[in-house]
Amino acid sequence: MGESRLPAVIATVVAVPVAVVAGFMIFNAMVPAAEEHSDLVQADLSPVSVAVPELSPEDAVFCLALTATAPDTAGGLDARPVEGGEGAAEAVLAYGDPAAVATCGAEAVAVEDTAAVYKLNGVCWYSDEAGLEWTTLDRQVPVGVSVPEEVEQPVDILNDLSKVIEDKIPAAEDAPTGCA
Image (cartoon, rainbow, N blue to C red; front, side, top):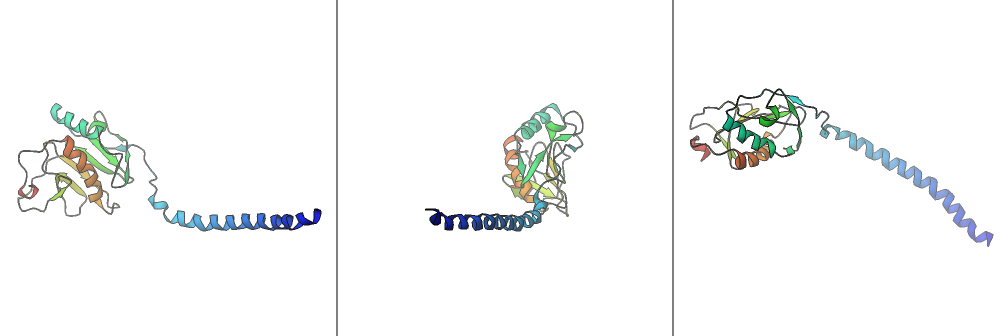
């Protein structure tokens, strides 16, 4: 009986170290691939310091409804807390690092009827030439979004925010003709 177990013992003695070496090699092959995508990890989700807009009591109710139901992510960027004084969290949203900042109660933008406007998920937006500052044109309370240059697709953020803006901020009576 002793002789019949010898091949099994030899196979085990050889197989275990081979499995350990193979596992180590596979692990090392995967680590560099993970490090290549380390830029996708958002390093800083600490509070963002923001300017708080002055809102009428009626506008403050709309903005609170917006911020209370805002998505946890916008354009694939995680929400961040905001700070900046009383009412900051009720009127301002921040996403990602560096932060894209959405301000309910932003200053309204006047545009020509022939200006390029963008209808995204039911909300009409106007952008500066660089595509970094966006403002709603068709809402009773304007919402402005500042997008850092590092964000490749600002429209992804706007699309996600437009869904809740359309639901929570009533449409304005007048809007540029391109918003119809």
